[in-house]
Length: 97
Image (cartoon, rainbow, N blue to C red; front, side, top):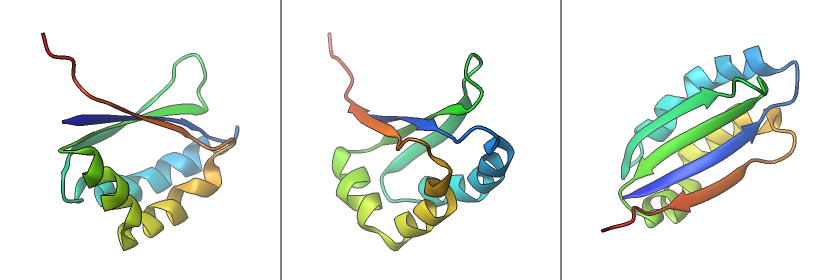
């Protein structure tokens, strides 16, 4: 299992529009092969900063899987114009022991 962690900096003043678009975007990522779960949280201290957390069966399910799909193009069209600057995306693997 891989945990995707993405900090999504939304341009100030665009939070409501972003959240409306997100309601359409989250089902897209959740239906991807290999996506186990996906959620977005809003930062308390910085209300224009959001955190996407998605669990994937493997890194390949996310990239190249989702990122090379037509669904990703729809995801980008819905959300990417809200970001200022671009999101920071990292992948994490569980530690055993």
